[in-house]
Length: 355
Image (cartoon, rainbow, N blue to C red; front, side):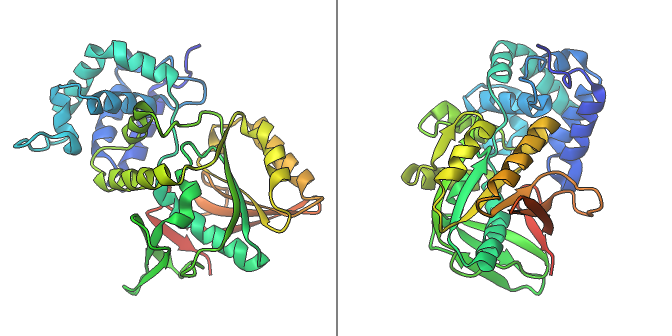
């Protein structure tokens, strides 16, 4: 089956615009825009699984091969892969020439990776806004938390309460919290400070529901997580390695399989005296409308016997100014109430909390 996005130039230009936001990745911006006019490079991604973004898959497969030791001039555009005495090459037309040559030369490696792998949530700094949402729920309910994360990938954000935090306020002060940890996550606060007490709320239970779980004991799976990160952002790689170290001692509990099939049992297993929380970030945008409706209906039905809190950060909601609103849906007695807690950066770099 051919991935429908692979051969659409507008899709590649869209990815280029996304890579350009905030200067996130000039290299990927340039390559995506050039690939929009290069059917041969587009064709390498046609075997990406349905729902998987071809550009992300291509960039990750190339990065994966480079991380595995593939020696090619393309390394010069990946600062973390430079050898002693080398300097990072400028992002210009030569970058695309090198990228194109690498892809076509290593096509036998890249195409199977694109066909077999999927994108995995791997930005642990999303815990900065999840912690704020969890704290708000804990403050309102007075209960410990029973957390079900949908699409958690390796489950690194399930360890959110095992990290330290530094929220940088507009007045220059820093709001710190969390436990003593080898990993501190920083976040810029826009506007008012989010409700993040120094001690995180207690967690009664946690579980992730993941269709494509990551085996953290596998070198290839760990390398794939790193490969999904964009170059020129070494701080993200440092955070990921820190989270992987903590996960080695505290393996996140992941239940493999279809999340919609497993969520009923997961909800039933939550401690009765805990606040029931279902959370997901940049997951359901890959679902069909029917799947999103099914989840909503299931939570409405569950709420007839106990309240359920759904904390999510997905794409823009009509009428909201933020591209990624942090949304809290409260389901109770068969009805749903929606609140927008604020806006967040999709990687957790900043949070704009509503007063």
